[in-house]
Image 1 (cartoon, one colour):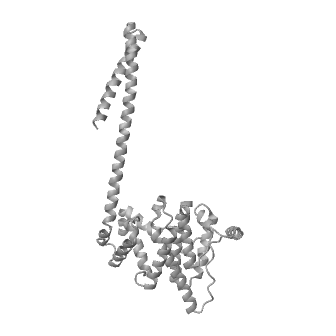
Image 2 (cartoon, helix red, strand yellow):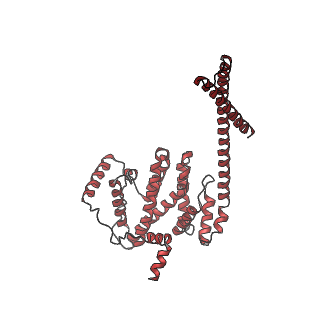
Image 3 (cartoon, helix red, strand yellow):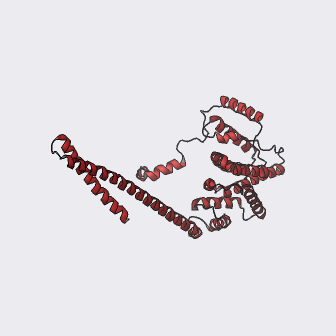
Length: 343
């Protein structure tokens, strides 16, 4: 801006005059170069006026610069928004050109994109993950499951339509993930019930209740972590086939992820949180413990079990060198890998 350049020059000139006038007065005071009374008065007056003007110049320059920064920041925000819009506008084309996913996954990803609300945008990698999970559930291929999934989505939307806080945009992905999890969880329970009926197993006793503080204090309390661990173990024992056990492990991981994210959001996510719990209760018959007496009783039980638990043990297949660690080492140090291959 021309005004900024002009102000910078005015400040420079004013500062030079102030320096000269101060030096003249200092020389007068030290006796090095005496001024007449009239000259001293004039110099003092000029110094005061120039100093005041210098302060005004600097203040105005700061205001101009601040305005420029705001304009620059706004420009950057607009450019970022344009780039983000371009990214999502071309997402479908980008997915179709992605050679790392197969045609079924591309089609499924496109279908998911079509059903997403306009305000929700999902990065490519997350969209592909959801598409793969959707295919694993075979949602689109089974009419009954597909209809059930649609019903769950509609119910979830209905239960959460009043909850539109701007600060929940970052968990918009859950609008897609929650209905899929509920469908997956309910399908698992139906599979267990079918196996019980087919193999004439003892009657299904139902799922044990969970407690919210396990999620609230997860990663900050050994008791909370251990309670979840035992709860997962109990439900795992209700699974009959290995496939059901593997499915439960995946369901559990996703359930904890969603519960933890909603729990961390606190009060602003309570409506969504309850909608999630309501649908889990309806379709899976999984309930949360609400009675204080039972909560306190279970807390005592967990403490007692924890005291008797040996935390020094590891699983039989324990190995400090995980497959990923080995891969990462080799990737970061390929030369060493080549040397080991030659020996």
